[in-house]
Amino acid sequence: MNKFIISGNLTKDPELSYSQAGKLYTKFTVAVTRNFDREKTDFFNCTIFGKRAESLANYQRKGNKVLVEGEVQIDNK
Image (cartoon, rainbow, N blue to C red; front, top):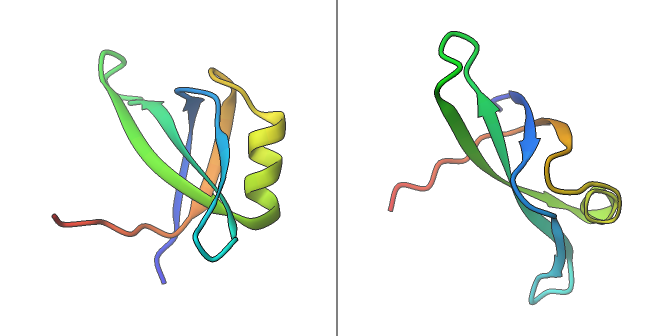
């Protein structure tokens, strides 16, 4: 397992959705400004499931600072 931690700001309001199997999830993007080069910002697309997805969608808004800890999965398309 890999561990990934980022701290940044939400780029838009998170929206709660349901999968075809009926599971709760929220997709959101976090903007992270680089420490060594304040002119550059990286954007990370994230997905959260279950009760945490519901909490994020209900209590967080665009621009809020968030800390994300999780596992990285890279799609090579």
